[in-house]
Image 1 (cartoon, rainbow, N blue to C red):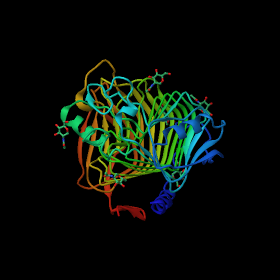
Image 2 (image 1 turned 30 degrees about the horizontal axis):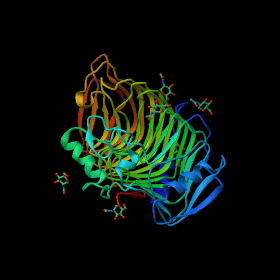
Image 3 (image 1 turned 60 degrees about the horizontal axis):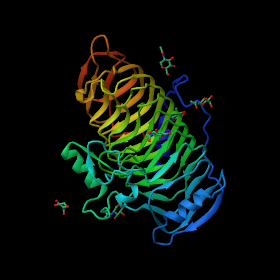
Image 4 (image 1 turned 60 degrees about the vertical axis):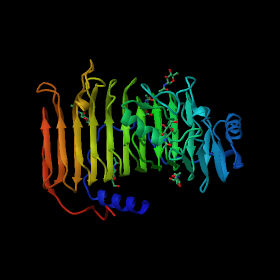
Length: 410
Ligand SMILES: *[C@@H]1O[C@H](CO)[C@@H](O)[C@H](O)[C@H]1NC(C)=O
Ligand SMILES: *[C@@H]1O[C@H](CO)[C@@H](O)[C@H](O)[C@H]1NC(C)=O
Ligand SMILES: *[C@@H]1O[C@H](CO)[C@@H](O)[C@H](O)[C@H]1NC(C)=O
Ligand SMILES: *[C@@H]1O[C@H](CO)[C@@H](O)[C@H](O)[C@H]1NC(C)=O
Ligand SMILES: *[C@@H]1O[C@H](CO)[C@@H](O)[C@H](O)[C@H]1NC(C)=O
Ligand SMILES: *[C@@H]1O[C@H](CO)[C@@H](O)[C@H](O)[C@H]1NC(C)=O
């Protein structure tokens, strides 16, 4: 995978680089450095929640609690401000699948209801500054394992919610809220019961070199929600929903760079559907998707609408995407008072190598999708579902081959 990513970058290197203006993360982001450890823990094989939490609470600011050998089992953990968690190579931290441990008080975690907000996350950073998760080890949400006291897994519950048209109360794997300068580096995150790593109203978030694996709906990979100065780079994401979804529910999302990402399965790259407070100044570059539902997906509606503007896609390769480009201002036709606006969206150097549906759905002739295309090549035989758009440039139906450069669909 790493090797393929290297080759893909070599391929992209020969393409023109466009000026993305000030759309990207405004910080100067370099590869993170793993902090020194304040202590090293070995797994006992039993429930290690208390041991890990105590170590985190008593760790010196600027240092990390290292999980250095074995398989750890734990309930929910909180990473304090300034402190990090380090999961060493070969070590796994498993979330004990007991809904009672995550319940927020209403005894709904692990059940279906109308809200789906009954659980705390497995790992929480709340009002933290300079915290992070590091290491080449694995954090396993165990969503594929039968819940304690139940006959379903967390993922069974997600599928049951889909059938019942309501919501599963499942924990996120990593939740960051109202924080600053947070880093996730190298870690592998698997089997999340719900969103894998989501940050809310956080300024300064670096996600570098992660591997994210999951299946089933609502296992979003990386979600910045109302965040500014975000860099997501060098990640491999294969899941059952959006690989990356930039949202703006209670605060604007701005200055976000999503660069060098390899996506296998799932929905692809998304902005929305919650865009209430506006999503602006985003660069999405050097992306490959293989076998996803969509490639580039910007989605909203009157229920969750807001302004999405100054978005640049550069070097985007979609293979076997059902909808390589899907810009939808009327997602599920949901109604409400929030007018979506999609403007100044640039797609530069895109290749969609297999035929799919190009779907561009604006609201009206006075509120159209405003986008510019440069060097956008799609496979012959692709179809269009297009209304209320102001598109400059065109989809050139001349993409050939089965790979982007020297890597691809193997
Ligand atoms: C995309 O990759 C190319 C080749 O490695 C690099 O020159 C370019 O800067 C990358 N784009 C961004 C926005 O980092
Ligand atoms: C984003 O980063 C820039 C450059 O470091 C900084 O000046 C600005 O205050 C940051 N914005 C927020 C909202 O943190
Ligand atoms: C859950 O997934 C992990 C790794 O993804 C796998 O090793 C394990 O066998 C699975 N467990 C069950 C019960 O399916
Ligand atoms: C799980 O339990 C519920 C109620 O306790 C029951 O209705 C259902 O049939 C069980 N499912 C399986 C697969 O055993
Ligand atoms: C973030 O924290 C604030 C309290 O500071 C809380 O009101 C809000 O609900 C939290 N947001 C999420 C998404 O948990
Ligand atoms: C469109 O977005 C690009 C990229 O953020 C920005 O450089 C440019 O100024 C924007 N154009 C307008 C008219 O806002």
